[in-house]
Length: 410
Image 1 (cartoon, rainbow, N blue to C red):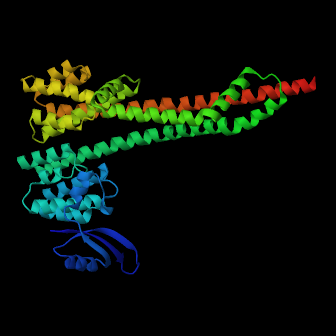
Image 2: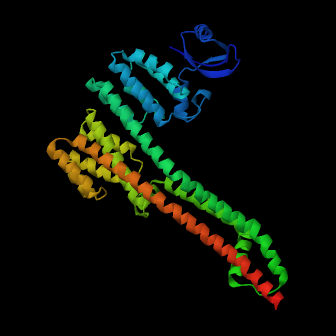
């Protein structure tokens, strides 16, 4: 069934609204809009427009914005509920269209329904929308379709997406305040050194007297920033551009991803995040019915660290040769011993899937505690830095004033 993008006026209020609607013909599309108390102003068919726009990386006005993890999680949970209630797949997708407020997601579901209605399976239809459905999502849906347990798989996916959104929100909320304080502190220091200090130190220069060392240092730094600050900023921007170009190359990306593990505090945090992602994804895939090697392939595709991916290649090769998962994990040297022991225990007890989920929960909680600890350390550091700068500034200005007053009094 064709999909139409429309622009219409709401009856009564006259407010302009945009969206998508499905109908067999433009006339039926206009009729549907009138039944919704909308007066169509513009109507055009969007045949395969979504897929082409996504492949090219472009956006029509319907595709502006993005599908957040929370929106996708909500849609997935509603989808699972509809299927558990016994609703056929196409009818469930039709019901989702009216329940979805995100225009891009609504257009995607419309396209999914049309493709499923034409005989394509759901996973293949989803794979044509990589900007909305990740490889993890698609492979889990494919496993659910193959096992006849699609609703259970969708419920697991919804739980997984909800947890990802929750962790992301917790981390962002934790670093928002220190990030603002850091930006504010840099802005204040830059403004003081380039605007306020030069005006004050001009008075001292006119006195033509010997100034304290700390005042001379302040004047020198302020003068340097005034003359060469723009060049320093350009140099920093050039370094950033060069770094971005370097990490786009495969060799540079591998070195950078490996070096990130050596950064104090951040390296340990990154390791815990990746271990949690590895364990949760692998555990969820195994619970959904995938065997070990296909599940590891999906894990490989969602790990955005080349250094980890190099080790995953070795781990997959070891499993392919008949080794248990714990042995190649230990041989890689990248995963913590505690995680390896828990995987080994899960294999012995036959509860590997549940053990992997437990490992992920442990590391997610550890990440949250680590972020809280880092944030708790950053805040006093910012306060101390600002205090040192203010003290330095006050001394540099007051010392020559006191010196001049002493000379006048003498």
